[in-house]
Image (cartoon, rainbow, N blue to C red):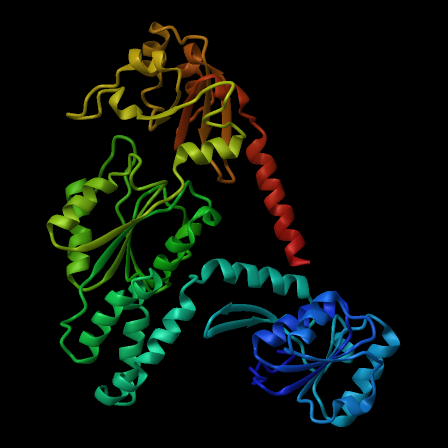
Length: 475
């Protein structure tokens, strides 16, 4: 650790800023957000600085720097861009014992302004000690994506109840447990979702000891197509809070790594023709875990409401009186389209898209109605077939019989993952495309004229660009 990280109070206190360009203005904006009283020394200020001076929000003097300007200042910034001037400010500040920062000159500074993530009362500072400022900003951006927008409101909400909690909850371990339970529980989730009225009522009940043991809750969460960086921010937050994660086979290890390390993981994955954990048992598991007071994430590949049986599970949870919500995910059709540069709708090709499951094509749909391939063939819509690899011969035959034998088809296996493969051809050859290319993994079948727009190398390009981006961020 090259610097000792602290948060310095500058509210209503004097700070000196020497310089008038964009770098100086950037520091000025930051200082004013912390309510510092800033004096700017420059002969050539930006209009932004002049406007602030005219509004009475800063002091400004149109001249060069003088060591006497440091009198009374608690911090000093130099942002002139002129080596001699910046060195003069640095030397004078050090002599006067005033902490000084020279923009982009760590060797002339004795403190560094970090990359900052701000959520009202919550502030996160990221620094590389001057070694790699661009990397620090990259880390900041990653943190920005992870923190919910209302995090600061949660801190202010908790502050409102500090006195009440202090009055009724004994100090020490009991109080620590209370707040730990609060910040990781459903009341905090209500605040983060914007329901402060409901959260206030629940908090008053909790403080007054009228709340029984916290009930469990189930979040039915879409994990997307497999790439960890395509998981939604809400899904990441819930994974980090979950006590139990009940997940499918298609959920990648990279996504599971986003969860709390001490969270219990229950694998209920299915493979084609093999369902070791039937749906009824999955329903029972998530209900049992929630009734035990746990925060449960039911994690599904893709989107829970697109052939994910999320609706069935939600019905069961509601019937059992369990609180539940649904977090959408990027479904396989969208992921496959994006990963291959193949739009599902296009003004020159298709104005609609239809999702259909291949299970219904090969007789595995149970009591569900059979697919009306003749109607689909006449619709002119793009057909996105899920779980259709095993039914490829039947799909090929039925659509060919209804006039689509020469229609383009694209198969995308393991979309967005490093082992993504894209195969293109015609409907009449669909069964051979599956067999000759050895397609066995999760695959999306897209049928229609848009399928001819797919690029087999699109996924490879995307992976290479992502790799190059990661390498650049690490430099």
